[in-house]
Each structure stands twice: as structure tokens, then as C-alpha cells.
Length: 251
Length: 273
Image 1 (cartoon, rainbow over the protein chains, first blue to last red):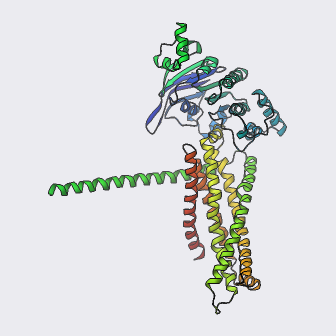
Image 2: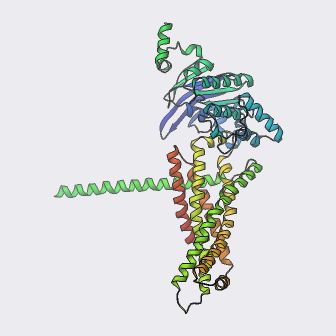
Image 3: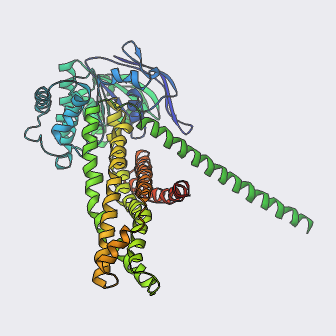
């Protein structure tokens, strides 16, 4: 479980996150939704410590993460996996080396054990016969899946995904969503996904928070999101014409 | 008239104060960059997480930054030596001067200046831009964030192997450059008929001061540090996209070159005075 209390973050005096308080539950996919530029990525990067916050508290179970120094954060970071928006695979390494990288850095496993784990992770995300390929030779969906394989290679307790569906076709996007949900349940991880894709919201949004201009406006589940009274959330959820039509058809 | 004079003063005051503000902002920016550079170096020289991985990284940087530069250094040094010999020969066409002085002049020019400073300026272009664009691209594609996220000291992991590789290999490049440059001078001089090989060899052996080699290697080590650290700094703090990576790469070459020339003067004064 990750508990965030009264989190503030600003850039050059401009507030980006304003008094965010939320609890991200274990074993479910927690979604942060909002428009582009609403502060979702800043929130996610603040949670993992890539950005320092001005005030507030970020608790990982019983540890106050944001007060730890770089060395002490390492222990918690070894329990985190992250899927970046652009996958962030290392260009100079092959698929196999990318997935193996965390194992090389943080474990004392033998070479055979590492290869076994790499193959297991790659199989788990349905990547076959691609061990020796470089990231430049992969499609967008494959890159995302390799990045997920790298993120889960150390059996993380916490999985962070920054817009996992961006740039993917609808079918691949659904597969990635399903994969994230399955892995979350399988390994009982605390998963936090940033998205503005309503498909993802309806498919995997077990807990959803909506932020706009750095302020948390709404919190609920995918069952509540379509029937909310929050006007700003409705503007977001029913932004496209298909969703609007569905809403009026329902009524 | 009186009020016009007053207004003129007011305009001057405004211009001066604006100028001061810009100067002040410029100074703040300069000191911020200066501080960031030293903070980055502090991160770079912290204890490596897994020395074995760093060792492998350093070996691949030896190949990428060092061995891959042998070709260009060889070609440039050969022609540099050839031109120095020919220019020395044509500018000392006087029966009073013995022919072997051409070899001596070529040797000292190559050892003292060309193989260290000119080679460093070429490496600033080749290696410096490569380091800045590699690290800059890693920054904008979130690969550095991915490293930090895993709890890896990204500055040390990415920059330290490059520093070690260039600090150890650039002196080798300088020695190659000296040998090839002197060889090129001999070949060009003989083929052009400005000097015989015997005179040339006598010239390059005449009044040889071994410390000149040490001086050249000391300069090379300093220049290698400048090229790698400045270029890595420019790449590491890129903010934006591909355009900024390109700008960082240009800045890396320009700043490294200027600093190489500045340190060339300082080191020459310190080592040869």
C-alpha cells in the first residue's frame, strides 16, 4: 500500500500538484486519470522519487519514502518496477540484456538462473524469439511488453505505469491493459497506472482518482465513474462523441 | 530643454539598470552551471554499485571511445606531420640552416603541440559530440530516469566508465599521433625532395628532451578529462527533445574546445616555464 498525504509540487513557482492525498491499495490496479498536462506524470514521478516534492508525505507501507536519502531509498526502489511512457528500454542492449539488467545489478544469481528468469519474464509477456533483437527492431507494443518484462524481473511489490497505451492501436492497448491487470493479481502488487484512455478506465480501473490542474477532484471505482456528479470529471469522461451518445442512450 | 535633459538621464538609468539585471542574471546562470558541474562530478566519483558491471562498461568504452578513434587520429597525424615538414622546409630554405633542423622542428611541433592539443580538439568534435548526444538522448527518452528508478547512480554508471576509458586511452592516442606524425613528416619530406631520410632521422634524434613527451601526455590527460566531463555534463542536463540534444552536442564541442585552448596556455606556463 502507498499512502500519499497533502502532496505539493511546483515548477518555477507554478503549482503542479496541490494538496493531493490518496491511498493506493495492494493487489488492485489504481488508476490516475486526467487530461494531458493535469499533473499525472509529475505525481507518478514524485511517488517513485524521480522528482522531489515541496511538502507532504509519501508512505510505502510504514516507511516515509520522501524523507529517505538516495542510499536508503535503494531498498524500496528494488521493490519497484516502472513502465515509462516511451518504454525507456536501453538502446544499446538487446531485449534479453534489457530484461537481465536489473538482475545483473541487484542479484547474485548465476548466469543460468538469470537467463531462466529472463525467459520466464519474456514468456509471461508473450515475447518469443526476440531475445537477441535490439529495441529499435521492435514494434511499439513489443517495446511496452519488454519494458513490462524488465519491470517485473525482480518480482516487484509496486508497479508504476505511465500511459502504457500511448501510441498503441486499440487491440494492443487492450492486451497491455489485460497483462497489467493479470500481473497485478498474480503477484499481488500495488499497481498505479497513469492514463487518459477511457477504455483502460473501464477495463482495469479498480480504483480511480481524477486530477485536473494538479488538484484531485474525484476518487472512486469504474462502476462509479459513469454516474458521477463531478462536472469536471464528466467533461473528461464524456469528451468524445461516442461516449456522449452512449450516455444519452443509457438515459 | 531642462526636462529633456532629465528624461535623457532617466533613459540612461533605465538602460543601465536593465543591463545590470541582464549581467546579474547571466552571472547567476554561470554560477548555477558551474555548481551543477561540480555536483555532477561528485555523483560521478561516488562508489560504484557493482564494480564488475562498471568494468565491463569501461571495456566497451575503451573500444567505442578509444579504439574507434585510432583511425581518424592516424590519418590526421600523418598529414599533419607531412604539412609541418613541408612548411618548415619551405620556410627555412637557407644554406646556413642545416637540413636536419627540418626534422627537429617537425618533431618538437608534433610532440609539444599538435599531437596533444590539435588531436584533443579533433577528439572534442568526435568523442565529445558522441558522448553528449548519447547521454542527452538517454535523458530525453527517459532511460536515465529508468536507471535512477532502479536505484542506480546514473551519473556514475554512465559517465565514470567513459572518463576512465578516455583518461587511460587518450595518452595512447597521443603516442600513436606522435609516431605517425613524425613518420608522415619523413615520408612527405623525402618524397617532396626537401630532405633526405638520413637528415630527417638525425633531426628527430638531435637534442631530444624526453620531458616533452611527459608534458604532452600530461596535457592529454587534462584534455581528456575536459572533453569527457564537459560533454557528459551537457548531455546529462538536457531538457526537452531532439533539438536540445543537438544543441547540447554543439555546446559540448564548443565549450570543450575553448577550455582545451585555455588549459593549453595554463599548462604550458606551469610545465615549461
